[in-house]
Image (tube, rainbow, N blue to C red; front, side, top):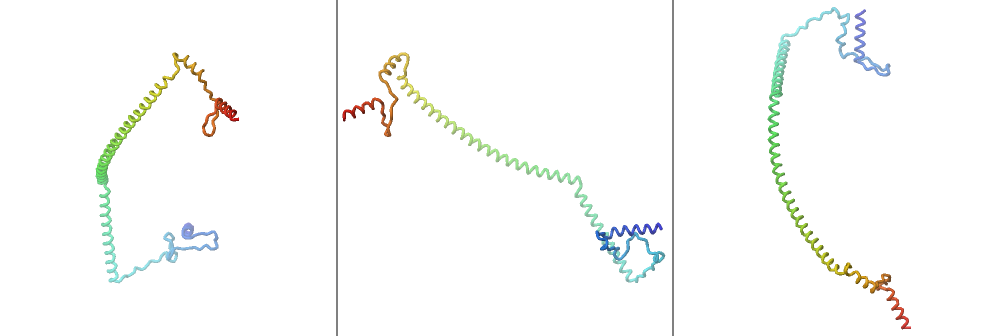
Length: 219
C-alpha cells in the first residue's frame, strides 16, 4: 500500500512537470514521457522477475565496436590533453606576477609618452607666452604714447584756457574799479526785453520808437 501511494505521488509529480493545465480542464491532455516512462517509476509486475538474455554479438562486429571505442578514447584523451595545455597556458598568461609586470611596463610606456607630450606642450606654451608678452609690451608702449599725446593735448587746452582767462581778467570787476564799473553800467543801460523776427532782426523799445517816428514823418 505504501508502495502504491509512492507510485501515485510520483505519477502526480510527473503529470505536473510534463503537462500544462489550462483554465478549461476539458481540453487538458496528459503528456507522458516520449518512448519510455520516467526513471523513478518502478518496473511493471509482469517484468519484475524477468531476466534479459545476454545479446550475442558476432566477432567481426565486436572487433569493429572495440576499434571505434578505442578511437573514441584516443580522441577524448587527446582533447583532454589539449584542453589541459590551453588551461596551463592561460594560467601562465594570467599569472599575478606577469600581470603586475605587464601593468608596470604599460605604465612606464604611458609615462614616457606623457612626459614627451608634456615637454612638447611646455615648449608650445613657452613660445605662446613669449609672443603674448611681446604683444602686451607693444600694447603698453602704445598706451603710454597715447597717454602722453593726450596729456600734451590737455595741457595745450589748459594753457589756451589760461590765456583766455588772462585776457578776460582785465574786464573783471575788482575792488579798485568797482565805482567805475557802476558808473558805466548806469550810463549804458541794457534792455533785454526785445523781439526777434523771422530773419533774426532785434526789435527793442528804442527801435520801435524810431520806426513809429519814421512812419509819422512819412504821413
